[in-house]
Image (cartoon, one colour):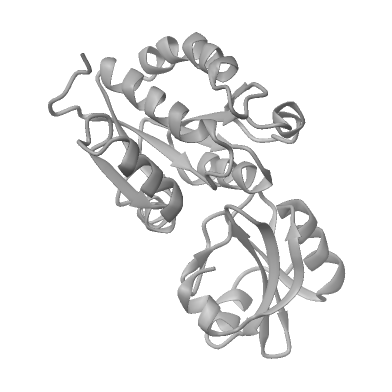
Length: 93
Length: 160
């Protein structure tokens, strides 16, 4: 896991899934979510996969897919900080 | 003898988890063939994948430059650098995800080199523009080597 993200001790909502399963998890379980392009950066990690890729907001938390080359895609939740405003500038899905 | 010197055309070889034995061998083989055709190979990979390459090619005979995957994605999305060709080595869903990302962010012609026990099933998952080169190869690289030989010549020629 990216060092910066790991240091935040993210809550893991879904483990070792495919990037498509992670996409569906966010779409079905997070009310407010935004489409981002492949390579979109959050902290020290990139959102990896084939569009559409979603990043969700739940309260003051971010929910997004994190892909590890050896272990598949995880859906993680971390404090959103400034990233929430950056996402809300995008069109809501 | 492999050609050396300043090669201006560059190909990115993106290496994921090195869990499947054939990956390092095939990456060196692709790098060798690219250099023979005047294209400079650059590796982007996980730490383990890069260490395997470093040990296999200690004189940097085939590979001069190796970089972290995330740094490479940053460079491409930031429009600081791009490549003519991109070979993504794939044996799991994460590999498919990285290939899809490269197809989206890079202007390179993308080749999905798919191997491992489930190569054919993984190939069926690809829904983005790329050239698929797939063979069931785990310990024996020859099935995928033969497929690579079929595409390598026109891969380098057709980008020009």
